[in-house]
Length: 272
Image 1 (cartoon, rainbow, N blue to C red):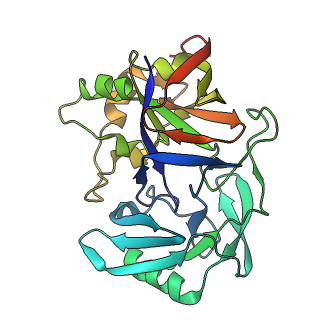
Image 2 (spheres, one colour; image 1 turned 45 degrees about the vertical axis):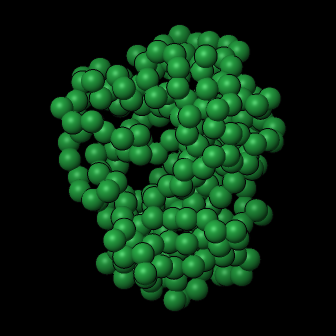
């Protein structure tokens, strides 16, 4: 039996995630997931790809507030509204895509600039902004927040076990920043899933997730290494990209909980 074992949200793109017992599906992924993003002076998004120390900034949700704090320095925390409504409009550049958002206040931007030792600004995506998923993969005009491109990422625990059995040093799941982790089944079973149902909500696997240098960053220290990309290159490489996990879309609303059964309704061939 396949079942949900972990559920994660990442309120600010590329900062620490939050493990939840249950999570609500919004119109663009999990509620509160990647609704905030940090941008540079050119309005381009900032991530751990360029700034590994972002891993040291953690997030917590307390009612209607988002708390951001640095590992080892919880006393200097930033308290933010989870759903800000006031702010100047700004464009946000994400890869070849461009979206919109509202800027937070200067004090907030100064706090993040000091923590990351670079000039940056925090942007929130209000409900009025509809960032559409790439039409090459979208089924029905689905939208997403400030994710790399899709609203949710699914990974099987067995896949991580398989990878760790090939490594000299065990790596945790947080290297891969999934939204949904499931237990049961065989390694990379998510590759074969085309249509699944969790708690009466239908999900569609649309594109394997190509992995980048973020997976090599220790989320506890912010230090960069060579794994797991070096090992993934030996057996998870296709067309010069390394794959681990499945990007998924969904229809409908609902709440997912740890322990929910994951039912595979339709299979597809392995990509690799």
